[in-house]
Image (cartoon, rainbow, N blue to C red; front, side, top):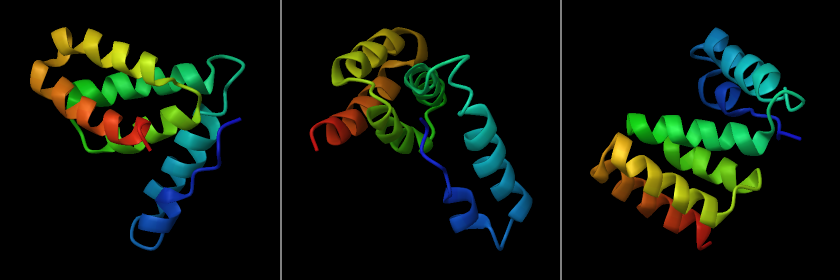
Length: 105
C-alpha cells in the first residue's frame, strides 16, 4: 500500500493550500492508491521514466519512492539504460548518479 503523502501540506500548505491538497490528496491519495488498476511498483517505474525524460529535480525523490515500492536496483539500471537512447545520454548520466546514491544506501 502506498504511504500517505504529506509533502504538499508540509511545504506549501500555508502558501498554496489548493495545490497542496491536489498533490497530497488527489495525486498521491486517489491516483497512486488505485493499486487494483496498476501497482505502486509499476506506477513508480512509469513515474521515474517520465521524470527522467524531463530532467527534473523530482526524479531523486521518486527514485527513493521507487525503491520503497519494491523497484530493484537491476530494474532501475535497465530502465535508465533503455531510456538513455530516447531521453538523452546526459539525462541518463544524471539519473545514474542519483540512482547509485539511493540504491547503495
